[in-house]
Amino acid sequence: MTQLPAGWVEAALGQIADTSLGKMLDRARSSGDHLRPYLRNVNVQWGRIDSSDVLTMDIPPEQEEHFRLRNGDLLICEGGEIGRCAVWSGGDAYMAFQKALHRVRPLGGIDSRYLRYLLEHLSLRGLLARWATGSTIKHLPQEQLRQLPVPLPPLAEQRRIVANLDEYLSRHIAAGVLIAESRKRISRLRRRVLQKVVEQESARAAVESASIASLATSVRNGVFVSRPSSEPCGVPILRIGSVRPLSLDISDVRYSGRGPDDLRARGSLLHEGDLLFTRYNGNPEYVGACAFVPQGVGDLTYPDKLIRVVLDRGKALPEYVAMACSVGGGREQIRGMVKTTAGQAGISGRDLKSVTLDLPPIEEQQRRVELFGRFDAEISRLDALLTEVEHRARLLRSSLLAEAFAGRLVPQDPDDEPASELLARIRAERAAAAPKQKARASRTRKELAAPPTRVTGNNYQQEALPL
Image 1 (cartoon, helix red, strand yellow):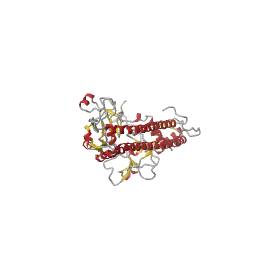
Image 2: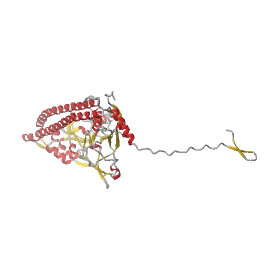
Image 3: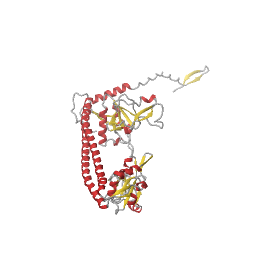
Image 4: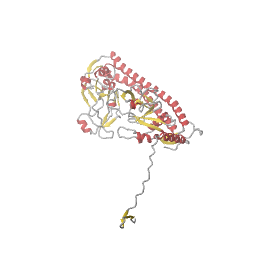
C-alpha cells in the first residue's frame, strides 16, 4: 500500500471482520427433509445479488443458523472472477450460501459497502491476482482473503466515502443501462434492415429455391484439438464464440499445435469466402450462427464444433448466403433443426445441407450485399461510439474508486476518531468475546526423594551415601 492519509491505518481483513465459507454441496443437496434456499457463485454479481435462479439444498436444523445470511453480510466469490462481491440485504427471509462464496461480517461498525467498493477497486487494478491460487481457474482461499490488506479510514470518513461513491456510481450504473439499451436497439435495427433487404427486396426480382447441399462443394466439421494452447504453437484455431451472426472475430483464437502443411493436406485451412456455422453451443440461439471468412486471414483453422461450407460461387455469393441464413425463413429452418443433448444444443451437417434458400440472380445478390453493407457501416459506426463511451465510463469508475481509497474523494475531518482507535476497540472486543480457557488445577510440589543410603555396623544403622 502507498502512504496512508492521516487518521487511516492498514489492517488485514481478518483483523476487522469475521469470515466464513458456505456449506459444501453433496449429492443429496436437492432432496431431504430440510430444504433451504442458498446462493451460488453465479448469484453474486458486482454490487448486486441475482435472486432470479436460487436453488435449494438440505441443511440440517443444527446447521441452519451457522449458514444463515444476515443483512449487511458481504458475499465474495471464492472462484472464477475472484473478489466479485455484493452485500446481502434480503431482510428476515432465510437464505444460506454455498462453499464457493465467502461470507464477511465486518466488526466495529465498519460498513460492508466500503469493503465491497474496495474489492472492486482492487479487482479493476489487477491487485487481487497476487492473493489467488490456481493456474487455470483462479481461487481466493479463506486464509489468503483474511490476509488481504485493507486501508481503513475513520468510521465517519468511511461513511462519507460510501455515500459519495453511491451517488456518483448510481449515475454510472444508469448510464450503463442506457448504453445496454442502445446496443439492443442497434441490434434490432440491424436485424430489421437485414430482413428487409433479404425478404422484401425479393419481390422485385425473380428468385429460385436452392438447398445448401446444391450450392456447396464441401460441408465438413473442423479439426479436433484436445487442449488448444493459449501460447503460440502451430496454426491459430478459432474458438466457438468467434462466430456470431454475420460477424467473425479472427482475433479470438487459440493454437492448434499443428503445422500449416499438415492442415493443408487435410483440407482444414480456411480461405476467404468460406462460410462458418456454429455446430454446438450452450445457447440454442447461437447454434447455426453464420459468418463468412474475410480477406487476409493467413493460416487459420477451425474447431470441430464449427461447420465449414464452401460454396460454388457461380451459384451463390457467400456474403448473401450468410445474410439469408441469419434472418427470415433461412434462420427459422435452422432454429427448427436444433436438437439438445446433455445441455448442449446442436445441429448436424446433414440437417444444415437441407436448409432451402430463395436466391435471386448473382447480380441481384451482389446489389443486396452492397445495399446492406452501406447500412451496416453506419450501424457499426454507432456501435463503435457506444464502445468508446463504455471504455471511458470504465476508466471513470476506476478513477473514482482509486481517489476514494487514496483518501482524496471526500474531505477529512480532524475531529474524526482515528482508525487506530477503532482497530484497538475491535481487538479488545474480540479478546473479551473469546472463550475463556479453564484454569489448570494447581499441582503440589513433589517431595524430594530421600538421598541414597547404606546399612552399616551390626545394628543395621543407615547412613547417607556421599554424593
